[in-house]
Length: 245
Image (cartoon, rainbow, N blue to C red; front, top):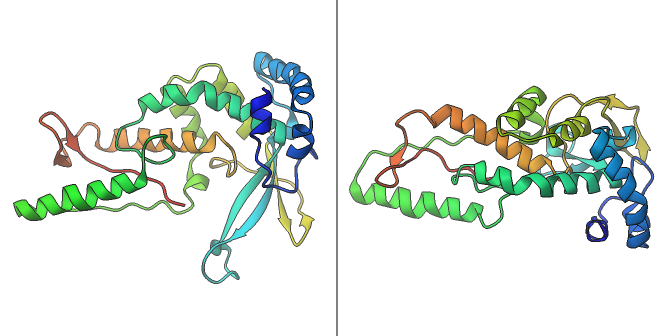
């Protein structure tokens, strides 16, 4: 527990529950003694405190005309104790879920690189196709606002499909059941409103949840058809998946 506390990021300056990482890190052993019974109760009862489901939405500028909403990226500032719970859940599920993902998926995965996917496409596939003078067609799909676009009901169905155990209830509560958001603008905080779609920007669980949803979609889309190019004697390569910032 002390190690989890020490690894909390310092990036955010405003906190929905008023608890800063600095306060928890000042004495990690004492903090661990205080949080352990609470986290154990949350784990056993499957009920997440209301404050842990709240978030502040901060705006980060992207390229382009900043008068347009599309040129701003939103990131959710979350409760500090909820981040510790998310880390605990992530450590419990990440290895099991990673083994279920297709090898073609390189985003957010240890030991895999988006550069490897690009090299595979450019050097191995395209150059060999040119050398063999074979027909070759590429279809690029880029998800706009990818994290925000995922349907929550699909998330719950896919988590069950992949066999996530009782932890599923905690994940669902972190996202649903009264979760609210407030926007920070010019130093002021807006009224709270519900967020009913997508995975939360800034949540440690969001990358792996997004990946398994995309993995399920790709399996349903191309997994049962004889498509793609011959990759080995027994396997075709239908897709290469990676995530960019």
